[in-house]
Image (tube, rainbow, N blue to C red; front, top):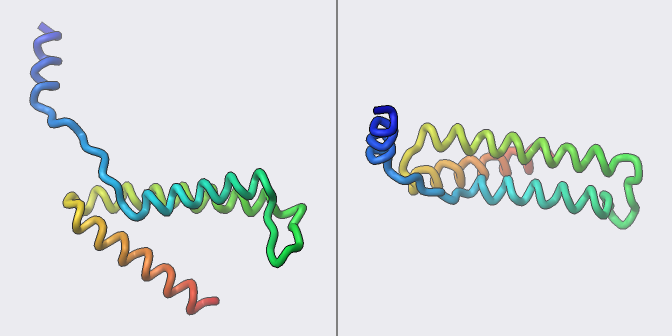
Length: 103
């Protein structure tokens, strides 16, 4: 009896599709950058930051986790892929503009 209920539930569920979004690329970029910093160390203008490389790498890992969490939040609010791309690209643009204004 339980097997029949499980099969009925599985038959009613549509297969899940993986949707690629801009924040997926940002998350991957942050994690790749963190791995690169952990392996090669952080260098700015040719001089290495020997004591800060681990901290900078951990900051990029944290950025990757936060961006991944934001991607999940945006996916819950915007179910259509086209709207998701527009909202996430707008968010990335807004963050870049704010970064440049603060800098």
